[in-house]
Image 1 (cartoon, rainbow, N blue to C red):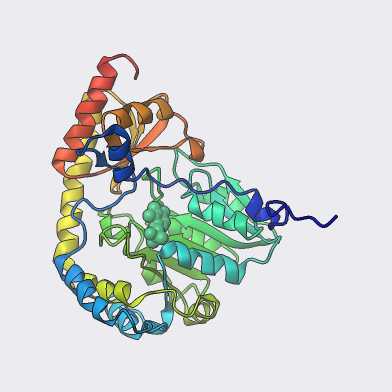
Image 2 (cartoon, rainbow, N blue to C red; image 1 turned 45 degrees about the vertical axis):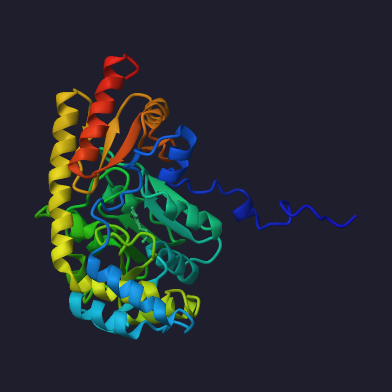
Length: 370
Ligand SMILES: *Cc1c(COP(=O)(O)O)cnc(C)c1O
């Protein structure tokens, strides 16, 4: 008998995959509860949204919706290269930075090769690695942050790529300039180092590394960034990497011909031109972090200090508190999938949203569940 079980016929790596669980959509919860004032602080989205300049560019680009996009993203790369002070040949554009992460895996990891990543690192990466049949060595975290010495110690002769998420989601921790520098010096030169910097624009810590400045010395370094977070363009899917031209050439060969659409490209160029909006977003986040951390301290609820646009909170039973918050119309992220069953992650919102979260959590605490 021929096997016609299309689950069994699938690639085993894919079959065994547990799909990534995104934050619960706002509309879904509002439908379920029959309410209209739910808030979502679950996906590290920007409470200010996109710049009006970017929105206008997007509307205008829709006029050419019938024309294929420029797959090479000439104008976008030129704007981005100019902004970052790198060469356009160093850039690879993607349908979100997760797309670029996939291009890296596809290009540099053959089935059976090893990749190294830290415990509690952004889950999309190990899931992508698993779908390509890569062996993943997960190194123990240090105080929830990446332990760069442990990452180095995990290197074997099969290791091809090391992933560093800086700052890390969902822990909000970061690798300092000194740690990064020592790490780069010790990584064997043939191993690709990927630094996922999805939140870099938010970071104001003095000792957060300027990784771009290391590119001339490290042709094995790839930095990934995104328009999804500080630029408020999560829905349009636009991310990129900065690397040596050699690596960018390879990544560009491995992408789909039209992986970035022209609406996203136009919005990206416009968003870059409005750095005032970025500043406003960063300033609002600074206030939000203070609000959340002070509020949690006042409630005597422990949290992991964060430099990002979210705070990870130790609520004892993450799933139970997540569910209870949901019933009150507040969506956060439970972290059991990360092996952090005690924690929830909450994104900084507007002041009103932050207060709503804190008040609701305070009430839950009073009721004795927390
Ligand atoms: C949000 C996030 C991304 C962004 O993914 P996109 O595909 O660009 O939306 C990447 N890495 C980390 C660590 C993130 O938290």
